[in-house]
Image (cartoon, rainbow, N blue to C red; front, top):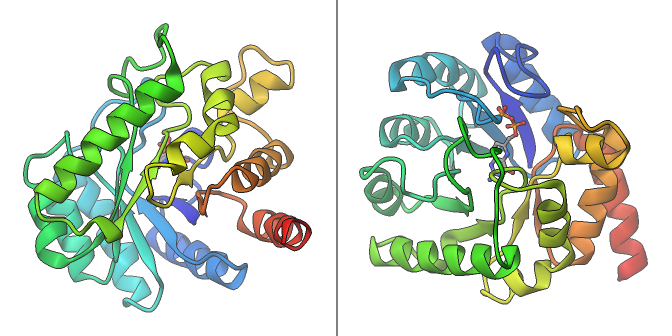
Length: 258
Ligand code: HH2
C-alpha cells in the first residue's frame, strides 16, 4: 500500500503531494512501482496534529480522486463519513479509519451500505496527545483486545467480516519498544483471523532506534527492514512511502521464505 498524503503537514512527506496533479502522478507512479493500492489522505495524524474539517479534507482529496478517474485502486485514509462517502463514489474501495469507527458515528453505515473494504487501527488516545507517556501492562494483549472488540462492532454494524483488515497502529500512542514488540508478536494479532496491515514506514521509532532521541522520521532502509520483519511475522499489507524499495525487498524476502 503506497502512501499519498495530500497535506501540508504530514510528518515525512508534508507538502510533497499537496498539489492534486502531483499527488495523482505519485499515485500512478506507485502503482507502476508495484503497489497494489494507494492510500490517499487529506488529514495528518502525526503526533500533535489537530483535526481538519470535512470541507477542507474534501477540498484536498476530491481533485486527486477525480484525476485518477477510478483507474487506480484507492484506499481513502479518513475518519469522516462524508469524506469516505464521496471517495467511494469516486472509485475508492477501502476505507482506512485510524479511529476504528469511533470518530464519526456515520462512517460504519457508509462502509456497510457500499460494501467497501475497511481497515481498523489501534490508537491510544488521539493524535494531539497520544505520544504523552503511553502505558500498557501488556501492549500486545491490549491492542489485540481492542481490535477484537472493534471487529465485532464493525460486523454488528453490518460490515462483512471478510472485508476487514486490522492494524496495530505503529506510533499511535506507543513508545519505541511498544512498536517493536507489536511487530515481534504480530502472530498474536494475526490469530484474530483477519489480514494484518502494518505501517512502520519512516516512523520516528526507526530514527530513535538508530541513535537520534529527537528523531521525527526514520530512513527508507530502516523502514524496509521493519517491513520485511513484519511480513515474516504475518503482515499481509505494508503501508509504505517508498514503494519500489519495499516491493523489491519483499519480493526477495518472499522468495527466501517460500
Ligand atoms: N499511519 C499514518 C497514517 N495513517 N493508517 C494505518 N492504517 N496505519 C498506519 O500506521 C498509519 C495510517 C501516519 O503516517 P503518514 O500518513 O505518513 O503521516 P501523517 O499522518 O502525518 O499524514
